[in-house]
Image 1 (spheres, rainbow, N blue to C red):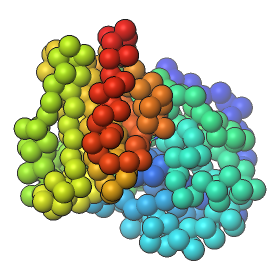
Image 2: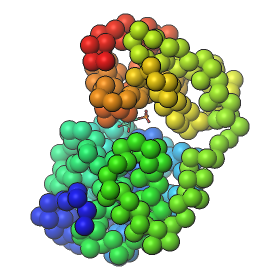
Image 3: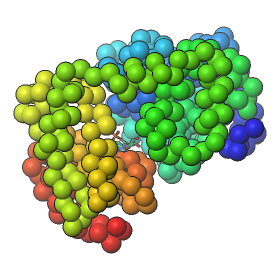
Length: 340
Ligand code: 5GP
Ligand code: MN
């Protein structure tokens, strides 16, 4: 039915592992987004329907915009329940790693994840998985982990265990990782999946409204300010937006307020890539990049900001003040002109 096909032997192994496990943990990357939380909670509902004891454990909390997501209030975030998060991981005999390709992406849970003796299953769509696991379903050509999870469940004949709540979780990740089906969204499989999810009773218009079209006052103001302050480096086809710790404070910033800001400069035809530097704390600058076509921002993030991601969406970190991060960026940008 779907043109993405997962090796049936992997599906068989996953089913076997699930059936014999007693304590399952599902985890996803730090600063979890719609795809990470959507895939985690969709799977959580399905495993619960199968009668399993299962918890979603993450390094930090869900962003405000995703608190509507069914199940998300059951999330065990290490920032709030550190001991419980560690206990659950230590006790688990099966761990699902959703939407990340590198153990470092679970931040403060990296050490417990690596030392866990549990079997591990990775379901992910980032390039080049670097997690040691018993089963790895890694398909970078699929636009979201949620879509990949749906196909996995469908092949396992477990899609029947999806209900309206878990279907909404899957739809959320498919929607957020494609900008409401405006990029990476030409795969016909996506629309077959949406058809199935709608038959489960999801209200896709309401999910759009909740995730993409609901903002706080601080978000509306900060998005405008960031765009107003944008700098264009026309000769390098690049756009840069920076927000300092002081500016964030002035705008009463809270986590998630700048979601999507980095994408906006890409709507300028002359701009090939867009960079956003956010000074989350003194000496900690979050780097976000987006690009068009085959210009790879994950290369820039990997080579300079201890990060990575996808060709067109990547991120990393800079340890130092914002002006030093900007200095470094301006220094390296010209060396990527050859890829333009
Ligand atoms: P965002 O800019 O929305 O924070 O992240 C976009 C994408 O970049 C994510 O889906 C993820 O693949 C990647 N990414 C973001 N931050 C990091 C990071 O610190 N390290 C790595 N390896 N990838 C990141
Ligand atoms: Mn994803």
